[in-house]
Length: 324
Image (cartoon, rainbow, N blue to C red; front, side, top):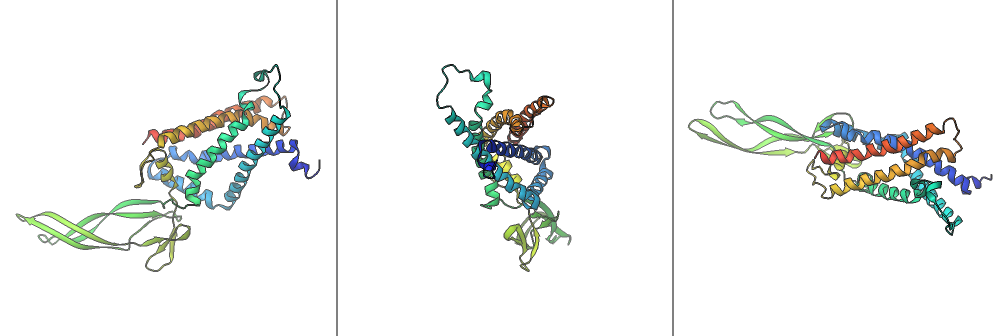
C-alpha cells in the first residue's frame, strides 16, 4: 500500500474509523468518572471537587494534548463515517428484489451513520452549553462561598460592652486550596440605638465594605490595594451544570427548559448505546483483532460497555433534576 493509500483507501478509512472509535471509547470512561462527582459528592464538597477536576482538565498539559486529540478524533470519526456510509450507498444503488436485512445485520449496524449524526449534534449542543461558556464566552463566574463573620459595630450605651454584628462575607476558592475573603475592611457607617425602659430594643446599622480583589485575566485575583496578583480562582462550572438541569444556585436563575434538557440528554445516551452496541466489536473486527478464542469476550464486553456507560451518563442529569 502506498503512503497515500494509508489515508485514502477504503480499507485505510475503516482502520482510522476503528482507531478513532476506540480512542473515543476510552475518552468516555474518563469523562464519566469525572462527571460522576456531580452525584457522588454533595454540597460544597461536591462543588469544590468538580470545579477542581474541571480546572485540572483544562490546565494539565498532558490532558490538554489529549483534548485536542479528542476533538480531532470526533471530527475524523464523523467525516470518515459519513463518507463510508455514502460510498456503501453508492455501491448498492438499487435494492434487491428480495431483501431481508434483519437476517444479515442488526438495526444498530444498519443505522450507524444516522446514530452517529445524532450523537454529533448532541456533542455540539453539549459543548455550546458548557465548554463554550467556559472557554470562549467566559461567562462562568468564579467559585465563591458566603460565610458569616461577627465583629464589633459599636458600644452598648447602657453596659459599655461592645455591640457585635454578623455580616456575610464572600470568599473565593483559590488554586492554592484556600478560601480567600474578599474584603479589605469593614467599618460601621451608622449605628442607631433605641433604648426603651432601660433596655436596648433596636439597632439599625449600615456598613461600608472595601473589596479586596478584582478579577483579572486567567481568573487571577488582583489585590485592589497593590494591583498585584494574590491568587487564582476556579471557574464555577459545577453551578452552571446544576442550574442547567433545574437547580437555582449562587443567585442564578433556574433553566426553565431543564426538563427538556434532561429528556434530550437521556435520549442522546440511548442513541449512544445503540451506536456502541455495534461499534465496539466492529472496531476490533476492522483492525483484524478477532479470533474464535476471544471474539465472545469482545462481544460481551462491548455490549456490557454499551449498556453501562450510557446508562450512568443518563442517570446523572436525572438525579440532579429530581434532587432540586
